[in-house]
Image (tube, rainbow, N blue to C red; front, top):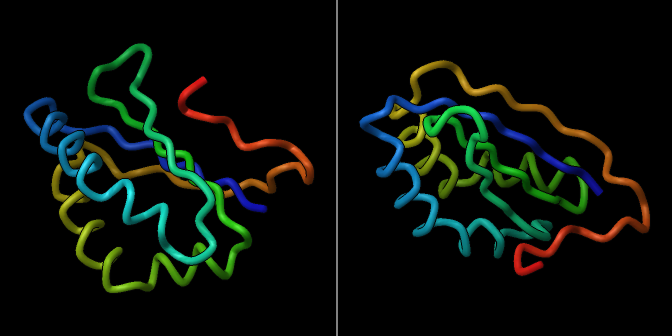
Length: 104
């Protein structure tokens, strides 16, 4: 399994717009083939920072999502709100390790 981490810093005037966009697209991302879970974290030291964590069955599922028409709609909207380039990376998720539950 793969954990994708994307840190984004938004222009202050765009933070609420991004949060609203995320609420609208969150469930659709989670229904993409191979996606197990998506979480949005708020910056601890800056209200303008958001980090997404998404768990994928493997890199091919993540890449298919990134090449999907849906991503092609959402990412340009998100990118237009950024104050700095997003920083993204993937890490192997330990086999057998549970994915955190947002309700906990």
